[in-house]
Length: 126
Picture 1 (spheres, rainbow, N blue to C red):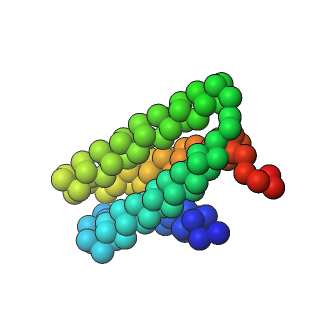
Picture 2 (picture 1 turned 30 degrees about the vertical axis):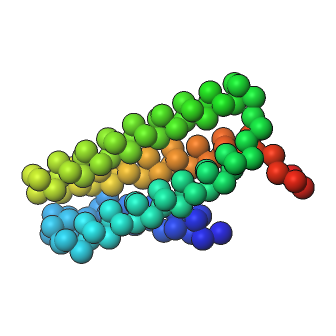
Picture 3 (picture 1 turned 135 degrees about the vertical axis):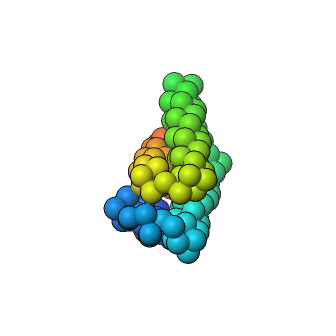
């Protein structure tokens, strides 16, 4: 599945980026590459979650768990974006590495959202 491949590649890039030194983070090419990968992975996961939600048949408790996971993902995403913005303004490689770690965690939280959405999904043949 293309969406899963994009997510795996993005997580690998973010893991690699956590080890980059200041010069690596200073390159606009690398900053763009990281942000673009995060946006692509998030969009791919959003599409998959949307597909699963189209066939949602979960109960209220499952719906609450899904909503809570979505809220946690959104908070993690906001925190990662804020950290990247601060890193860029301050030219701070440590914050950029921290932002990469936070972005990876946000993507993992998004994967939990997808898992929960699929758990409540009912389609013909499933």
